[in-house]
Length: 146
Image 1 (cartoon, one colour):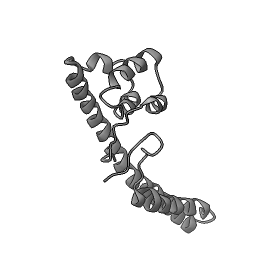
Image 2: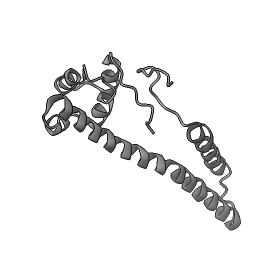
Image 3: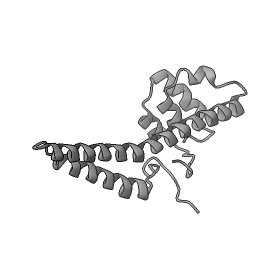
Image 4: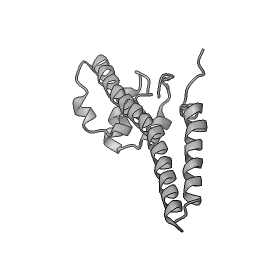
C-alpha cells in the first residue's frame, strides 16, 4: 500500500534523474567551465567542444522531463474538466479561464467534497498554488505523477 500523501510529502523525486543523471551532467558542465582555456587554438577548440558537449548533455537530460511535465499538466486539466462536470453537471471552461495552470494543478489534490469551494475561493482570492495545497483537508493522493 502506498504511503498516505499530504502537502508535506507530495513532492516526487526520481532518484536516477534527480540524484544521478542531473548531478553528473552539472558536474561535467562545471568541470568544462573551470577548465576553459583560450591560450592557443588547440585549447580553445577543446574548451569549446567540452562546453558544447556539457550544455548539450544538460539539454538532453532536462528536455524530456519538461515534455513529460507539460503532458502531465494537460492530462490534469482534462481530469479537472471531467471531475468538475461530474460534480456539477456543467463545463469547467468558465472556471478554468479564471484560474492559472498552477492553481488548477494544485486543486487537483483536493477531494471531491471540498474542491468546488476551493475553486471558488481560488478565483475570488487569487490564491497561490502553495496556499491552495496547504488548505486542502481531504488530500486526494496521486502516486502516478511524473
